[in-house]
Picture 1 (cartoon, protein in one colour):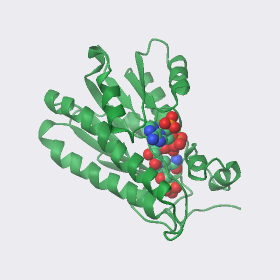
Picture 2: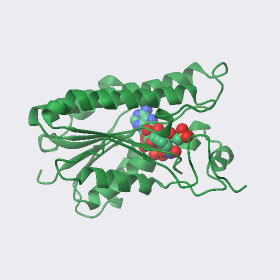
Picture 3: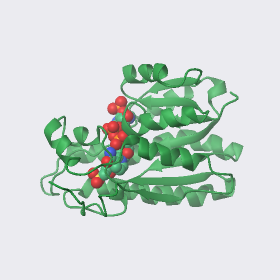
Picture 4: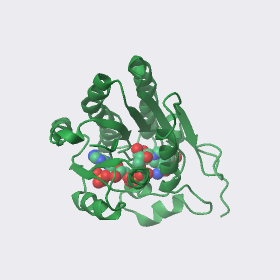
Length: 252
Ligand code: NDP
Ligand code: 8X3
């Protein structure tokens, strides 16, 4: 493969999908991942024509499925240069004594362990080649804790710590490890958090201008196109109306 290869988890929607578009525009070959096969198939037609594209359908919670999917890549697609660990969601927004185990499992298994399983398969190649860039999509929820955010914030704090650990361990190999931590981005995130309740989801982004997925993809694009000696180690990106996870200048 002549082009550099970017492997993006959660490419069926929101931030991951926008990253696929922006990195394809930047000349990357794209490996898009997610559970919704039809969306991954559709993405091929939406990317700039001529973009080399592969997709992998797997649930990041399923370790064997993750490993088998990565192993199934054709040989010329195996030298992954950029890994974007983006797949993830919040499940529920409840005080700790009312949260459900299913939601807790989902957040820890997807946001934390899923990120680890994907990384486990891809990092060794980067180490062997002494080349690579990893971007973990964290969150302001990985920097602060907000009421009812308990386990989601815990999962994103884990992503924050794991990212820092990756940077330390991969430093001898010249691998860049970065965290991009968004504030409120209008994607399917809240629809998932509120289990398909459109009204509740829409309310999250009412009364102020939230970020768009493309705003984050723009930062990802900037991050992966820096010269070899520059790493955007840890970036927080907020909508202007947001000062912290709890301080939001809403006009309604
Ligand atoms: P979306 O819900 O729009 O996208 C989530 C993506 O993750 C989808 O492509 C989905 O694909 C994938 N995904 C979810 N669960 C799994 C799973 N079990 N296995 C494989 N893929 C999975 O949300 P966003 O784009 O907003 O979220 C992307 C990342 O950004 C997440 O890590 C989120 O925590 C983070 N983030 C989001 C913010 C926001 O306000 N939106 C703010 C801060 C961080 P599929 O369903 O097809 O499997
Ligand atoms: C997503 C943003 O504030 O809902 O990580 O946690 S928030």
